[in-house]
Image (spheres, rainbow, N blue to C red):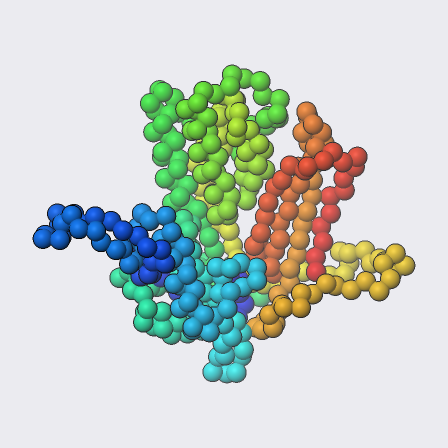
Length: 368
């Protein structure tokens, strides 16, 4: 979304809904007993009519309430993500585009040429926390900011683009790990240069199995590391994926590799994910043209019939995929990695252990 904003010269504004749940009415009949603070009514049964924090259905009720507000305002849910909302908008110059609203519980992000108009409309139904309505500085645990980039050879002028940094989240996680290690008179490794120890294979680790408490601790560390990958630390995706395979029965060596990753993060803590809206160089010289009409006569791209109208400036998506052949020394299954770019901005990535054993693999990259 940061790339879409830059590509179409749109503004971003974030906001946090104050006491989000209690804005929504309940659907079930929920009763409680009035406490002493109700004075003469203490001890009497009371019907709860608002989605108070702590009720099992409060999260669902708040989302239902927000959905009603957005649909009334002309927004429609995206086919790709039900919590990404879109509405046709037009700039004064006549440029037509989709304006977006991202909702994550009570965290709202608006992308529009007039985001405060959307905020004002929402303010008729909910209250935002004072001081929270502003260009985003953080989003879902990541630090968000704008930086200046250029192509390095002076062919194009410098420009402002959005970037994401998991700096504060990483810092807090490292401090917590170091506090836990200090209780055992231990510390993180020094002078770590790679996310995982060179030559280490988790499937060949036969060190002592962890006890119940340490298993839970290991699982918590993996959860933290996986969220860091989601926040843009793509360089850790392979070791985190490899160690995630041993969540049910981790060993001491696996835990030490987790500490190794945290030591790497402590040493290299300023990595940013840059959302560059510039067009990539996709010259035909990089691709071998093949005629597949003999094998697939009449083939055509499958375009969903309910796809929304294409608005705004066009984008180019590029997909890179590769795998290590027979990477697992025990099962000979391969590890597949994939990353998708929109223009020059990475928007999706994963690393996955393949389900079957392949006789051969060929790393490829492709674009369309």
